[in-house]
Length: 426
Ligand code: NAD
Image 1 (spheres, helix red, strand yellow):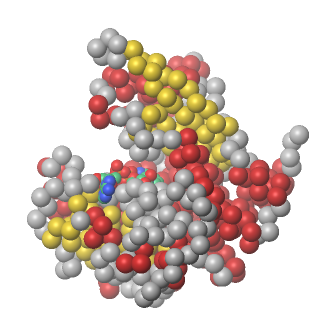
Image 2 (cartoon, helix red, strand yellow):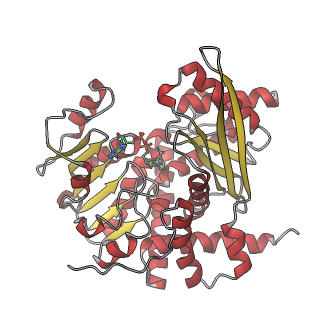
């Protein structure tokens, strides 16, 4: 099929915040959002930049840059991860913070959106340096964090241990143990059962809902997954459990394709004995990550990183359904191409919301001081994500739009309704 390059939705849509806004703008126009509310929802409530001076192990002093953006707290305390990366920018953090506002509204949990990060390369830091950065970042933000104010969580290159240090540092400053200040903690420190698996499990829950709606039978459905980390590998196991065939997986070392189906348990074992990667995995043919995305399959689940499906490769995608496990794997310019090909895209702000949903459960359990069984967690996760999927599908039908725009419509409706009921103070 020939494809005519669409007029750019937004000339600056390489910028993460502008890319997010270009989708938001379409939804806002359909809803006829009044200009004042539009400005209110677009503008982050607070953008914090803080310097983090650390004495390194060799005695020298280095100053790192930390960020926290609180996008919106109309629906409740802000919620969002903290990423450690040399490449982070304020624009990226702002976009991710806004996505958290929409994501929490879509799954209807009582949180607003935030995101944070520290510009650093964890690969070259020692564990002691990493702990010092985490503690100083937390101390600098101790007046902004809090169970009723802003609740961080793990994101790229941050983990359970780092969340434990955040909880401890905040608790030291407040002279009491405050487990609910952060989620994604070890279960031993007030974490929730099922949190580690939640995002990958959620990817399967919404994919299964999409399959049911479109008459696809699990045992006849082939899956390709990009990324074999937390989200991708759990999603792979979940797809196998419901009877699907996973024919392609990948990680930084490349893609692995076997049309007869990949033995996911063997891949997990391989990862354990190969420093966490799939390097030299033998049960499949090796393909590049670009080729992997273009394999013939029923469902493609990008679960690695942003900007993987772009206007350059969207035309060659063969999947019938894309379920976005990663944040922002599809650029705004790829959206109309996928739509013109009739590909159903279950957008990130719905598809990967399982993580924040179980983070919400963790916060609830910490505040109650009473912990649920894994069955309770999973049953509630299923219910919330299924309801969110149905609510987004209904908006898609009602407004005759794709699921991404429908998800933004639902989020804007819910945040705006709360805002109007609360009124504008000032
Ligand atoms: P992770 O670090 O555990 O795994 C990332 C995987 O992607 C690894 O297998 C890595 O090798 C692979 N990868 C990296 N670069 C790649 C490339 N160029 N091509 C192919 N594979 C590549 O991270 P994760 O927690 O699984 O997160 C993955 C994505 O999901 C991110 O976008 C993250 O923001 C998003 N997400 C994660 C959660 C969560 O709870 N973990 C929640 C919501 C969204």
